[in-house]
Amino acid sequence: MARQLPVAPEPNRLVKVWRRVLERRLRTRLRGKVAVEIHDNTHTMLTFQRQRALWRLRLHHMFLAAPDEVLQALAGFVRTGDAEASALLDKYIERNRIFIRRLSPAQMRKRLRLSPVGRYHDLARIYERLNERYFQSRIDAAITYGPAPRVKGPRKSIKMGSYSADSKVIRIHPALDQPLVPRYFVEWIVFHEMLHHVYRARRGENGRRCIHPPELMEHEKRFHDYQRALAWERENLDLLLCARTEQA
Image 1: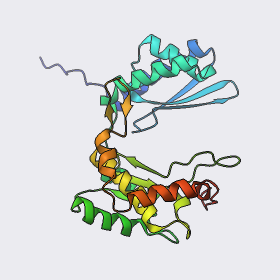
Image 2 (image 1 turned 135 degrees about the vertical axis):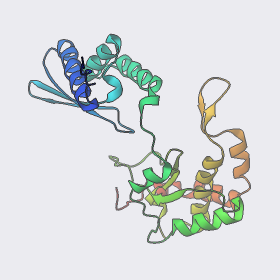
Image 3 (image 1 turned 180 degrees about the horizontal axis):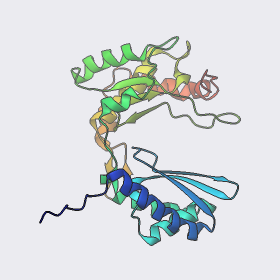
Image 4 (image 1 turned 120 degrees about the vertical axis):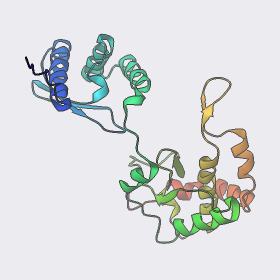
């Protein structure tokens, strides 16, 4: 006598079931109506907004089976922005990074708008020459002018460059694209960020994250105009702090 075996539920159907369960669990903690959207993002794990009596949350699928203490922290963070709840959520996300879809650096770069050519300094050309001169063209990264953070009033500090190890992208502050900023100074900033590709951040002996290990700082001194670039920065920092860029 033939008997049909039960058909396993489709993955999408299971997600819908778990999402409804998650909405009920959050409803009791937020004391209101809750609508949850599940996503598979690679960076932002949770966002939320209040629409009158309705809480709308966009959550990574790792939260579908989150334990009670995590959901309690999530509710506390959504309601009041509680710092302890935020720290607990960060730890939960870090423990469950295995569930975050990984993208290759090339895939990440496709999502970015790269603008390496400025009005006065061509970052792509600078990067290529430095790569050939100091690294035998072995560094595989991209470079671009980054957006200038919006600030109210005069700047008190400026982050002239950054390096993303995930996407392998160097970003240079657009304030450096000025006729009064010498090429050797821009080269020094680019060189420094290229060194971050070679010397990755690590935990120091005190347990803190060290993004400028001693070997990086020592290697930086090999830059051909190191002392001149340092001197120019000391004498002209105000020029960069007061710069008005198109992105600002």
